[in-house]
Length: 216
Image (cartoon, rainbow, N blue to C red; front, top):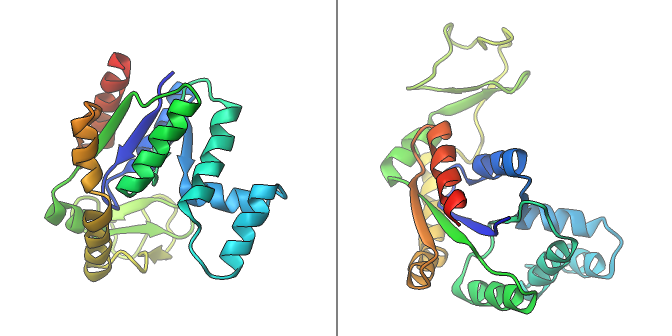
């Protein structure tokens, strides 16, 4: 059992690796967005707080997010927890540390999925998917055999995400570096930080993360 944080900019592949850890190690991914959506429809007291804040168009406070995380930790998970999307700031990191200490738990590793920004932009802006079957392609590394036609199902419904543009991605990267990148130094100082190449093949990234967890 292990508790870990996945750190990395948008498009680094955190979600993909979290899903693999759920499947292979019985870990539970704690994604802030998923927790808020679940809480909003749960009917619990915390869920009502979330709904009220979101209905007013306001940002959910760190206190509420910590409360949602505490609920999840109380239920437990055979393989441990993966924190994805939280913490994003130094105050959130302090709050999480306090919560884990109060519950007699800790962090085993903070895994930074390190990327080259230019390569990341090229990877994200070049990708497109089939709207019919979900097959994923890329302009440079995995184009369709016939332009405009899905190799897997023959559909012509090939799509690009609206926010997979260079300008949109650079804006998201700037937000990450301003708010979240200080966590790299924070966790390095605590001796928890381990880095992997986020732009390597998915299987290679999974293997690198598995080695880190095996040592935790």
